[in-house]
Length: 281
Image (cartoon, rainbow, N blue to C red):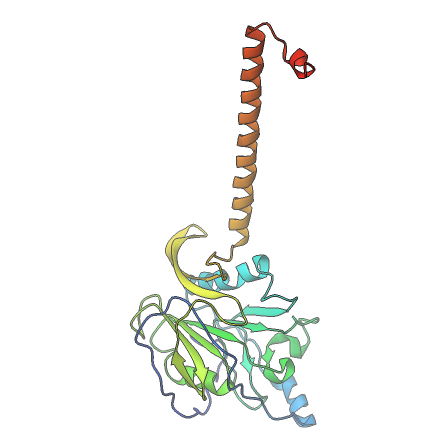
């Protein structure tokens, strides 16, 4: 993705040590090496008022916009969270600020556990993801590659590591910057290393490539799945499933009615009325 806030680049942290060679289909990450920002001074608090948290940069392409929706909408409508009543926040194209003095990163999608949604969307602290406000970085960030200029495998990757984001995912639908569509990285000792396993510990979700139709278009999409391997459903899929379930129940009831009518007809042919047969025991 092309970052949607101008000047979203800053000084690069130390070079990362690992790159991916094998395409994982699911993710596993641990919340390791979280970088805690320094306590804010009163001047830092005032600095929030001057931060640019949104601008008018347009969405880069239609596929990426739809893919972002497929990664956020199902969690909001169909996922109950990682369990034990824990809160979560999933968002797309929202700036992640480590301090008021650094330019933000703007992931295509991020998921942060154990944080509550802002009670006031319009307050400055509710407009973006301020790490000092939420007291942690996001647990997972996902970048969708739309061109070769986004630095998903370079500077952007390094900055996510410096932010302490435990799990970094690159989805490259056209394989423009990597071999394979999906790469998953886990933060360890300040650098990202490729990982592949069944599920994200603590999050209880995985990611996998899915070939299917979404909003009328057939494509290879990136989707969340639960620990059993079942896809986290969109609202439309849930509605369709309930409709099919209701239709199946109606079909079953119709078959039972037809069976009862055939049995009654057979009894009448033998000179037994069904009503009399009901009281003959």
